[in-house]
Image 1 (cartoon, one colour):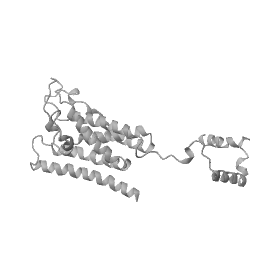
Image 2 (tube, rainbow, N blue to C red; image 1 turned 180 degrees about the horizontal axis):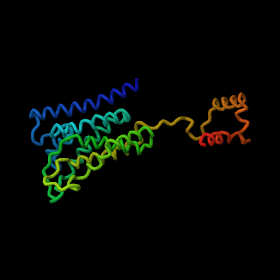
Image 3 (cartoon, rainbow, N blue to C red; image 1 turned 90 degrees about the vertical axis):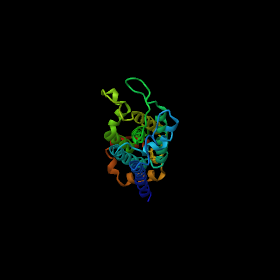
Image 4 (tube, helix red, strand yellow; image 1 turned 120 degrees about the vertical axis):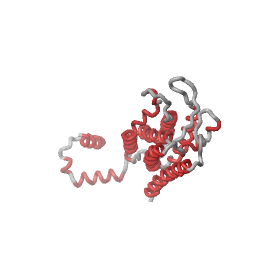
Length: 255
């Protein structure tokens, strides 16, 4: 039952996110939103509402399609493997990344002049999720979550190049329409959240026998009974003190 609830949430939240994104895009297509309404405009008071709304708005069909697939996959992984903290990570990352983008001035790489820029799209949230999932597995050092980190790195490792302006790599006649500020802000916020929540939520289960000084009278009784019933298994063992027998058996398993 617990598994089914977790799986249900991992499917429900990405579905809600995508529904909001595509619903907003349809409203845009029918002229409900025009100009820079709902966009982040760096350092402009009118652009503050974009901190909340801009991830739901997109500039073209290709734009929203390119963000929909990673949003669906990464949010599913977040809500499935980090179900206890998923909503906090998503909501905090959404707002923090948007606010950081608003604080970053949009500068022309070639001239150094400030530009009036309207920034929309969910790519900042994509970077929050990708970098959180990758670094969270590393910070926690848990095998299952490290596997998620490797999968994210395998499929979305190229995202790292998105945190740099395209103008650094190719000569462009017109300024790039891709907001590297959103990518950089999302990456930084994702790393910070992974560190903050490193000890919260899903962690490696530690069994009782892994704790120092563990002793079980029942296990010891079963061990003594086994030795009495199967003395032939111990004929080749060297004569060692009773307290060292477990260490010796552990050495045999490691060989």
